[in-house]
Amino acid sequence: MNQAVSLTERDELLASLTQGLSTRSLRHVAEEARLDGESLKQGVERYEIDYAWQVLGSQRLQDECLVVLAAHLGREVSDAHRDCLVDVLRSAAAAQPADALMSFDNDVPEHLATLLCAWFDRQSVQATEAA
Image 1 (cartoon, rainbow, N blue to C red):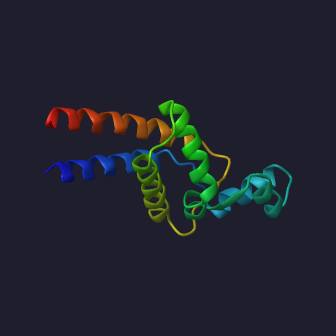
Image 2: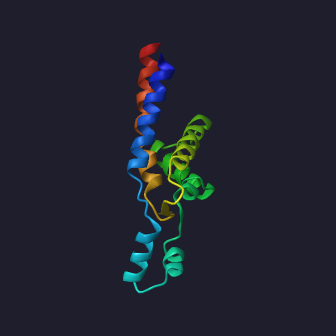
C-alpha cells in the first residue's frame, strides 16, 4: 500500500514538473526569431534550443539540478536523492512530445529542487509515522 501511495505521489511530482515546463513548437521558435530579426539558426543557437526530451534527458541539466538540489538540502545529495532526481528527469523527458522544443536556459533546476525537497520531507514524515 505504501508503494502505491509513493507511486501516486511520484506521479503528482512528475505532473507538477512537466506542467511548469516552458516548451515551444518549431513555429513558435521561428516566429520569435523573426521578431528578433534573426534567422531560426541564430535563435536556436542563442537560446540553446533543442528537443525538450533531449534537454530534460541531458547530463548537463542533471548536473545543474544536482547542484541546486544540494544547495536546497544544505548538504551533498545522497545516492537515493540522485536516483530519484534522475528518474524524474528521465520520466519527464519520456513524457514530452517528440517535436516539443525547449531551451537549456530554463528554470527546471530550481523548480525541480523545490518539488523534490517538499517530496523528500513528506516521505520522511510518512516513514516516521509508519515506524
